[in-house]
Image 1 (tube, rainbow, N blue to C red):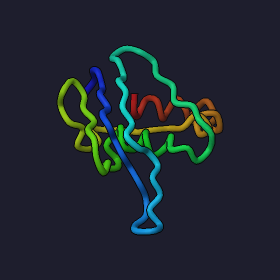
Image 2: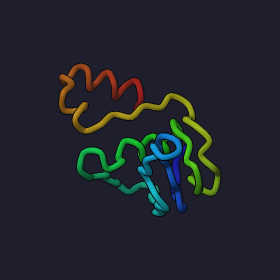
Image 3: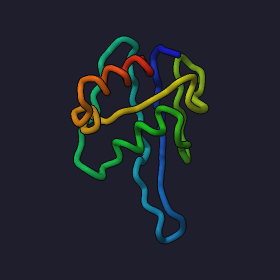
Image 4: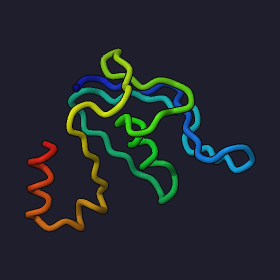
Length: 103
């Protein structure tokens, strides 16, 4: 599935009760089809959590995520995510195999 991804007022927390820690709060933006998007931030700011909810690996507590108007309900087909740090730690052969598997 490809197209424009709409993220509207999503919220994601971890823990329960007094231990609940909000990671993403009322976050909204649009990822336009065909445009490169980069996510940058300090360690612990919620980048991986955001990627996981956008990919459908993890559910949000509130808000919606959709692609061309269809809600994201979970990963569709073979799906993989790789962080920039992991990409740089792979040798050329491993990276090529990964890209062939998921590209």
